[in-house]
Image 1: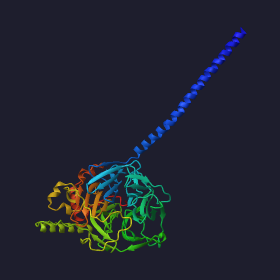
Image 2 (image 1 turned 90 degrees about the horizontal axis):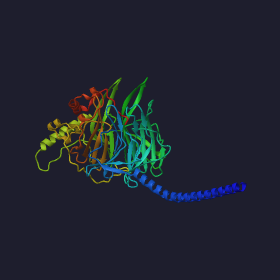
Image 3 (image 1 turned 30 degrees about the vertical axis):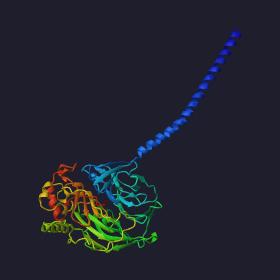
Image 4 (image 1 turned 180 degrees about the vertical axis):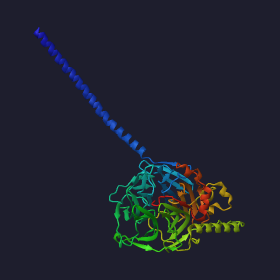
Length: 532
């Protein structure tokens, strides 16, 4: 009995060992199979990762039905044969909308394209962009601002980005010890340097206007803050000013700041001083030099835009606003005049329009009359004498870093019918005055650029006593001929969606337009972003 039990136990142990051995063999085979499969799966995983990454970083471009949506405080930059519009903002009466889209305009086709890229900068406005002729073309962007939809919280950026014109893709440039966060600053290019000056920063508790000067070396990818010689003789803090390159360096004109008047009171101040930053390869020798304003300079204003006319080495300035603050009241005068500035002879001139000359006689007297009327209108709006731009004056030598060639280029787009001041108001076509000879609607924070010898104007803001308008009209003007604005797209301000109060929505557009014809648009209690 005992022996039988012992044999049974031995048999069970042997069976368990055999079973365990079988399990171990299966486990080894399974493990071996898993190991082999894992190696194959790694290749598949890497391949899938590469495919997903390419999809996520793929640049998409779409032809647009027309110009971009309404916006102000974006950037319009000329490079090569195209214009590039980046970012901007729109306020509908209740909510602020910010954009991060990148558009390209082709004048020869009258075509807008939208480029989307997963690595694009966040939405912003009041940033600065300059072009560089490197690696197929680059657009460099710094700073700007963003706010919550109800504008209760604001954010200022201090990031630096580079857009590849060749690849249509964005890349963030990670650098240390750069300028502080800001908006309303300006940039220009001198040799391999991006020159950055001024701007403002709003922390929600305090608004600070800046006057620091920075240079970014596009070869070394380094920022350097520059203390100029005789720092006491330098432009003061400001934002929303004009800045263009010249043969000596860069020129700064005007701008806006707020001055403390006691208690909790601040008053806005539009600046009209002019400075030249004389550059040198030795960055310790940079110096500011104040310039007198020669010729017919613009009246004191802010929110105006000046762009570089590279083929002539000149600056072109459009529009703006002048505010007069008295206690709690503000009176604003808006402009739509056009000026040129020649650094070579330090001369400002008003750019006036003239009627097209007819090849086959007739209509000469009417054309001259229309030209006189347009010239008188422009002179009245600027407070000047209607002095023409001096096209015979020596042109300044284009600064290094300008990316346009010297060939003329006119837009092939057909002129579309539009009302006076660019507004789509049918009744205005019955006035008998040539639409082309009437400048676009008064505005500030517009986007302007000069491509070859053609001036382009897009969007911006205008305010009545009741509400704010964000524009989406688009114009071109041949600066050599000056024979009138071509309306590439008219705006219908009456049809703009406004979510503000009913009182703001009830306004007499025609009466506002009549005021514009006299001397800009006067409005009470208006507020605008002069800083940008």
